Length: 438
Image 1 (cartoon, rainbow, N blue to C red):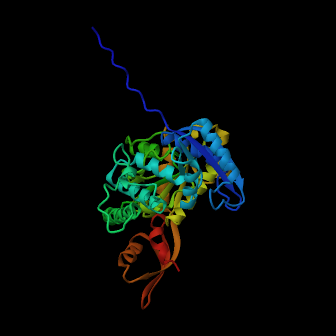
Image 2: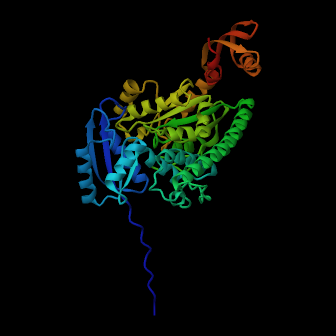
């Protein structure tokens, strides 16, 4: 007698309905339709099944439900027809918008905005303690102003297992007259404070490592770029490693650093970190401060651009905006046009000449253009000199010594409070002196 064991069945995916909104007074870098296509990829990355979409162009958001009342009724009919479990808005909803929409759709359909979806993806992809802490902080800071009495117990909202960050644990005893909502708010406040303390310790630890690397004079090159541009693949090729890389958004979150040799034998540290995206949630930028400092402290940035993407220019502009936002806009940068093995030669020439002048065309997957890229890195780190005029306080003795050792001094004056220096420094060192420029 034989026994047949049924194959385990995969749980059915939640059904998501997308809502795109174009606000005339708030133009974005990317069109509404392109942004909606990106939202669909985000939903797919989060494990959702997109069953439809609705769009609306408005002069300004409705104070109650963001979209107009007529569109809300149209949306309700579509969600009933498609049996949608969740509605995702391709905008940031205010707590009031979310509450009013939840009143309309009831408890059977969840309302998410773009930020909540990205936070969920980050929670699924976090794989280290640092990643978990940073994602949980971002989630809780997002949730705090959105708590309502419908959240009868905070523990129900905790992520816990399954690779997701989150979870503040059980709720303590209530004080006299406290509502569950007040208890939940207090508990979240305590947890946020504790998370910030733990992340600050990580930040200090990272900073100590960075100071050691600076003393060792090993240049740090950071890979930046739009999510899924191919940064991890490029790191694998240059460093001959096998870091996880996948054709999906936010495949890697945690920073990874590897040693890479340049043509003349010099060693650099090449760091890959989280990819950027348009409308990157402010909660993530704040929570991932310790990680993003790996970028802002780099000597040189490699801006990896997906040359095959139809809106590559807009994605590159979005990355540039985010670099400015995190204080890395002044760091010398090499544009790297990736995935050119999928393009015709004429397309490559046109992209480099017209859209990304000076970019180095490569294929991280095929290893094409690596020699030229390494030579360009070597030149920009060690051979290019930038003119500067700076006033260095005497407390910055290390920077004064480094200028003498690595730069070219045209004139130097020792004033009462500062050292006035005119000269040239290697491009990799500019970011350290930039705050003291006259």
